[in-house]
Image (cartoon, rainbow, N blue to C red; front, side):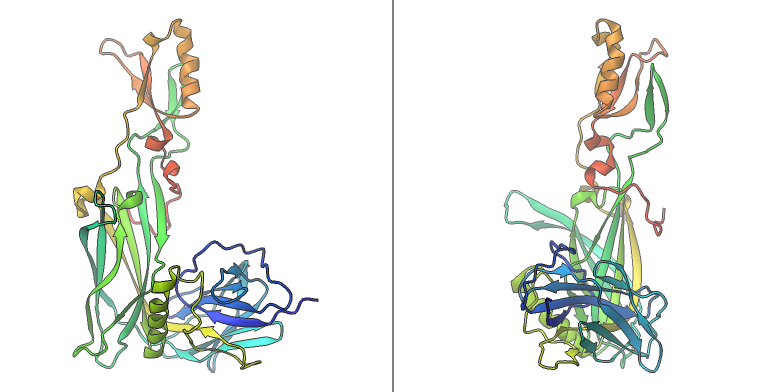
Length: 395
């Protein structure tokens, strides 16, 4: 029987990244395993998610860990056993974080119990504004500049309020096409409105960097012009409509120091949580075996969220320009001899393309041919887009 002694690393609040195989934990007998946990409770509505991963040692890659008992407890209040919604992903159903109350994360695994310290949720000040500057930045290639948007955030709080902040954001943007296909070709010069429009899609990205701000040491508790990450204009981000959901977390100084240390360590390591620096100590202990090294931090934080939309007219033209596409191919009946070869040729061409429109002459209402475009220019799913409009999307 394999006995695995678990060592914890807990990394809270930033999306775990890396190439992970949730089903193949290749840990040999007697080898010490390390848990990597990503979770947070806020005063925003749940569910709250805790992601638990496992690696064979420090500075190694991680895999999702299944079958643990994970609980979030409220001091002098309710606790909730999280449900494993997918391998290594644990979620609450009913628990609601409340400003002024304290919470603790507990994990039980193979007779080992791990607990965070009690962490209190303090109210986050409102986000006053999000704004941006369009920029063009030099790259290592002297012939190519990187265009994009630099976002900034402002807030202000009470003089005795929280002065440490962490930021995450979620990008969502609408994708279009150069040539829209609104009809399906039925044959014999007949069309019908398409049953599967592919000219509008959405893509999304979540932040992966550690972004921290503080007003400590300032005469007023005012955060002004705090820089979020530079958002590049690639993947056609600003060609139709763009949305940024900004999340602001109010931290206590000890948690801020944890994230600051992790940020500085990861400047050398590269990826955030593929490998975990051993010198970043947080608020987790192994209460069963205090001699086991435990790294990480369970966060309880007041949170504010603001969503910003940018339309094409809100950004400079050089940011919103869609990559060029060649015009649709013209298939003319007159080019086929005998003329009966035209219909099979059009149908064959549409197997790898999209019908755009008929071609007419000025002398006849009968089509003399058809326009056919490639998926690259007429199908947004070809660019990795999702045809399902997000529930929150505001037209």
